[in-house]
Image (cartoon, rainbow, N blue to C red; front, side, top):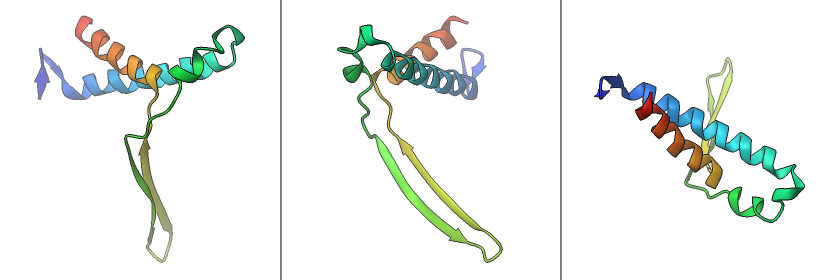
Length: 89
């Protein structure tokens, strides 16, 4: 599927990169004392969904799979900025 001539996969890549950068900015802000009053609100995680880890035993090896999506406000802002960057470029 295409969005204005570009693929949905490229948009998803921009969103994921935006979330990662937003998360990194949040972690960096935790170490700066000037933001100490604001950081707890910006980095409070909210659990959207969780698939608890489960094991698949294939007798030769064991595979453990699980997934958790718990973004914080700065990661969500990074996702929005990723969509804006995708539309701009």
